Image (cartoon, rainbow, N blue to C red):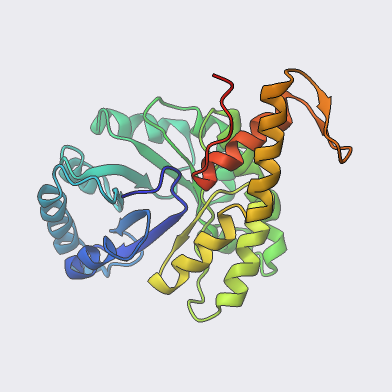
Length: 274
């Protein structure tokens, strides 16, 4: 069963339907079929048809949602009406007008614009708030890094924060963190996830199943965080309004809301007060 709050998103190439099927059993919360960067130009049409077949087979199977990162508008047209499609991921979006166009081509389909350029980052909020079909936004770091000429990873932090703030300002869920390209460096992945979590990202896209457990652990609240959140929620239920806990921590409505989010992310339930 899919997690209440998805934390792991696994990219798989669209021209490998056998790998896509295996990915749905990998433990990822969401599978992203990639018709863009992961597929060679001479395999694009095959990838589209194979993905359409897979999404037709997946009708009614919602155990693991399947998102598709499209390459062209022809992909959108071919896939938008298929019942196994949970969301379309739109690469290299720079303006709200592009989102409106795709929404018109694929009415009712959930959309995730990918911001992968300086211009996309500048328009992050207008893209995030552009259309009711936009359910999330995400950052494409490889393309953005190339566009900005950034070599040091810290050079992307302003853009990362911009995307996080834009998503929340538009009423969307916190964005997922972009992929970590070195599938062998799990320690580096852990450190990067911790940094992303500190910036406000929630969950991360992966390019190999071995990355999934690291991402899951990095973004899932620790036992100490869960215990602290449960204490805050319990205190708020017992005494509404601002209060101080025995250890001196001040608790107000914002702190309680944050604690409730922590419990929801952990799959736990604090006192309801009902």
